[in-house]
Length: 120
Length: 108
Image 1 (cartoon, rainbow over the protein chains, first blue to last red):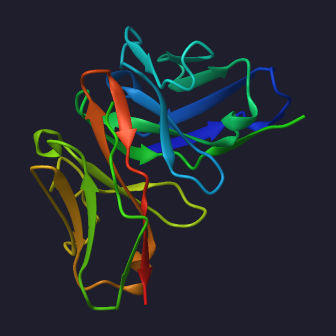
Image 2: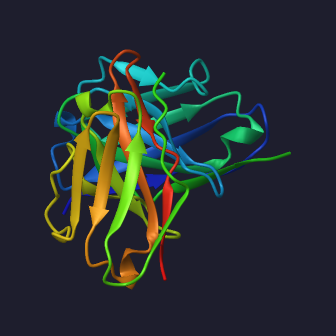
């Protein structure tokens, strides 16, 4: 079945970097756009970034633009999020999600999430 | 930029109908998607493209979208429907994907 499994979360100091991974299985990964979405403790969902199926287009949310980099390796069925210059307010559970359809696509399914805590 | 407005909370008795709204100017021109999130779990898609239901989602879940308001309707509410619900659209002007603030559904 379709499955997304995030990894790489943890505790990191402000200003440092962290790389998240999302391993995909059960579908043709190279045919789908992929998103990262985060959720701060007790808060709602915030879209972070998207990458087109072939990696040629990438878009970022305002709060992470210039600090985070989304990428993918279609040969490894894996999505990445490189997070640099981390701030306290980047603390959240980070989810990867598959985009169904075109740009106006819905997100389905979602991974189980990986927690990131930015703290000194 | 797009700001999707949802009521923070909705309460309903079991067996009744819950309606959760998502408001924005001219949202009727957008495709709206709805997600259910239970505590400690990842979000799950319950309605996409305004009113389509993914396989495995009960027929009790339905959606509509017109004018300035999209609505998720849950008929014959059950205790297991208690969760947070989020609407989502694509802001084509900025290539941003936007979520509403979420609505906590409480089953009395």
